[in-house]
Amino acid sequence: MSILSFQFDPSLTREFIDLGYSLYRNDIRRVPPFRREIARQLSPGFYFYRKAGNDHRRFLAYRSGRVAGRVAAMVNADITDAERAPVGLVGFYECVEDDGVAAELLDAAREWLRTEHGVKRVRGPMNFDFWHGYRFLTKGFDRTPFYGEPDNKPYYPGQFERYGFAPLRYWNSIEVRGREKLEALIAPWEKRHEILEGRGYRFVPATRLNLRKMMPTLVDLINKSFGDFPDFTALPGAEFKALLSGLRYALAAPVSGFVYDEKGRAVSYGVIFYDLAEAVRPMNGRLNPLTAAGFLRRRRRARRLNFFAAGSLPEEEARGTGVGRAGLHAMVAWALDRDYDDIVFAQMSRDYPIQAFFRRLEIEPQREYVFYERSA
Image (cartoon, rainbow, N blue to C red; front, side):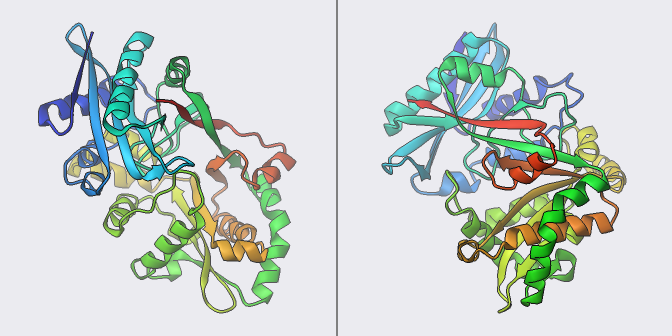
């Protein structure tokens, strides 16, 4: 058993990437990430490596001459603890089902974080930041995954917990199938929607907007609505555009949109994606003319929606207008008008107030995700 550490070595980076595919070779439920995107994130030109104060180190574990595990240790200058001290991150974690290999990998990552950056707390899994993949799926391995969902081996959470990591935060996803259930879910928000429309609020689907023109507005809404969320960091504009560009085929524009207040200011938003898991899975992480053609054929058959994100300006929330609930009503109603009756309300914080509406209908979460922390 040996551990090798590096940063941008091309040959080792290929081994690092390859493990993320070879471990899942026989996993028929897996939706492989695109190799091109992983390679972009691990190349020197990626935005994370160019920002002052950021640092990273990658580790490969070898057993009997073969790669048996990988992890990246990272310091994001914008992610700190309550005392404003740097927090260590571990991400890109993949490992065989062997606690010894897992422990040696995580030991190496923690040692580097302690000695090079003096961190006292380590969190994970997180690939750089809030935006590029974090959390483990801990429950719901028997469900059909949706595109963009955290996807990992079922034994990874146990490896982290036996190593000393403890859950820091929880999220869940709730899938609601059937028109009647969706209508019952949004019924309590209908009056709020009517009241706000009567006051001059406008609920506008994304198809009626120039999305490129609205990009700065969307970025501002996301940054402000998530501003107090733990470990949230704003993205540079170029990287935000790169992320959205990769998702442009998934965006369900007719049922996503903005809410404008009586003064014409955008105060709330909702982003819904077509669930493209069944269209992306056969591509096996590779993007070329042949796989792209197959993707476009399968994309047209997507009937499940992924309610990915929604938020409102803090000052609007402070006014108590209920614009968030009204916006959710509008967007789910738009989906139903287009005969979409299968929606995943994705990766919601477990203490998010909307959870009460699902409980009222006795709809339980089917998936759970956990973000971990331990001392360095």
